[in-house]
Image 1: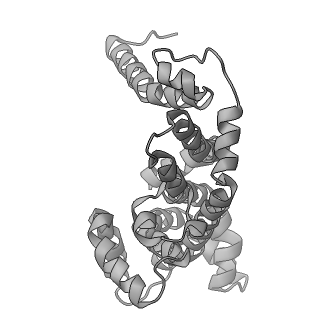
Image 2: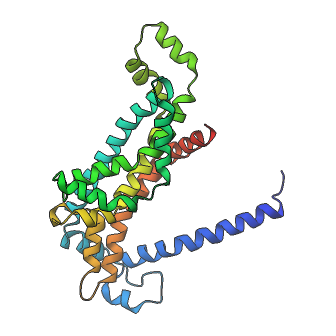
Length: 274
C-alpha cells in the first residue's frame, strides 16, 4: 500500500483546516439554538451547559414559522419543477434537433452565466410591477426559473449529447417520435444531471433574500429568510432565537443534499467529463 506523499499530506492538512474553519460558525449556530437567552448572553462556551429544546419550539410557534416554511416550500418546489421541465426540453432540443441559429442561441444562454444577477434587479422589478406580479410568489418563481437557464441548459445539453446516437437511431427505427425518444430514452439516462440541477436550483432559491426582500411586502407571503430577518429586527435581538431560526432554515437544505449526495456527485462528474 502506497503511503501518501508530502504534497498529499499538505493538501489533506489544508483541507482539514479549511473544513474546521468553515464548520466552526455552523457549530456555534447549532449550539446557540439549544441555549436559553441567559446562557447565550454569557457566551464563551460552545457546548450548552443547560441544553433546551424550548428555544426551537418557541421560535417555531411564536413567529409562525410553519407558514413561512410552506411559502418557501411552495416557491422552491415550483421553481425546481419549472427548471427541470423547461430546460430538459431545451437541452434535448439543443443536443439533438438541428434548427436555424442553434449554436448562436446555445452560446447566448451560456454567456448569460457571466451576467451578475444584481444588475437586472431594477429592470426586473419595474417589469414585474407593470405585469402586476410584484409582491406575489409568481413574481419570485419566474425570475428564479429564468435565472437558472444558463447552467441548466449547459449541463443538460452536455448530458444529452453524451448519450450514444445509436440509441436515438434504434428508437427512430422502431417508429418512435422525438417526444417518445426524449421521454423514454434520454430523460431517464439524464437522471443524475437532473437531480444535480434540482439541488443547485433548490438551495439558492430556498436561501434567496434580495429579490424576496424587494418584492414581498405582505407578511403572509414571506419566505423563511424574511422570517429570519424579523428575528433580528427587534430592539433587543434574541440571539438564541436568531440561531434557532437559522437552524430551521438550513436543516431542509442539509437533508436534501445528504439524501441526494450520490446523484449530485455523479451529475457533476458527468457534466465535467462532457
